[in-house]
Image (cartoon, rainbow, N blue to C red):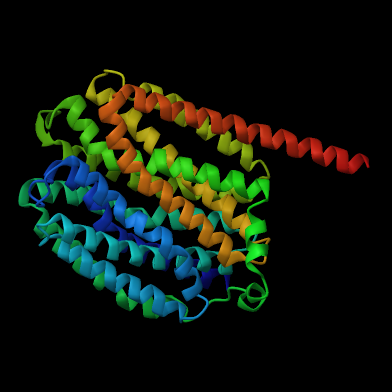
Length: 411
């Protein structure tokens, strides 16, 4: 059973990777090819990289309800079909309104897919392998980011957006046979138990300080590390090192270089986050591990804006991006571990995906807006301060929990 479950996790991870490639490509391509896409400003780029997340905010509760009513495999299949079609259409869009519609449809598809994947992991995982499953999923599905950003930036610089959009969108549709072979028709979501829960009971879930801290941290990390950095990376490279960069004697564009860095990130991430996930299964010190990586992220935020040679700056940025992947895996492991111990799993995971989507949606808009107002150095410095603050909060939380346990044992 464990063997079959791991195969199912790998399958949903690889399908997600194919699904995600089209979205990842836009993060590299649009900031430098926005005129080719029919856009009129970088502000529109920020909106388009965020709108799919804003659309998901009201949809996430509906998606959670849908998974209590529809065939699980049907939800995943619908998501993949919508993703493939919208990605192909990226290559033909030449109007901002059309782009907004396409990104909104893709956001609906991603809500179906990401919540479905979380629920599948919750069903298949146990306390002894939950971190490993989360690490496997996070590591493998981000291979889609590797492919989308690497070949997206390269092909866009050479042939334009249309060609790469058609290739990636068609690939997503070709993954449909994998769904029928490996994805179960139904999953258990404790539907009978959750039906008995009132709205007040679900609301009271948020009064749990542990859940508030998890959701608040996830929101800030996704906004700063995923939404902001990923969406502005090629733009940052363009500002710091111009659009045409001499890399070991080869002239490359900012989009290509950003794609290369992200490709290295997502190529190394599976190995790293799987090991982190397995380590989380063997320890009860998740708070301390989280705090350590938060401090590392904070320090690198202060270093990245410095004027250093490109060949020195690139490894620093790569380490920062890998730490972001690790932090995402730790937070996913923490929330799935929390959800496994409550009745209203779907509600908790729906709330988590909603909060994460909100952070990811605000990231690109805040990134581009603040960069213009306060400058790159201050933007990264502010992000570093937030990460350091979160590290202290999680360490303090651990100490408070230890004191409570001592009081409880003494009484």
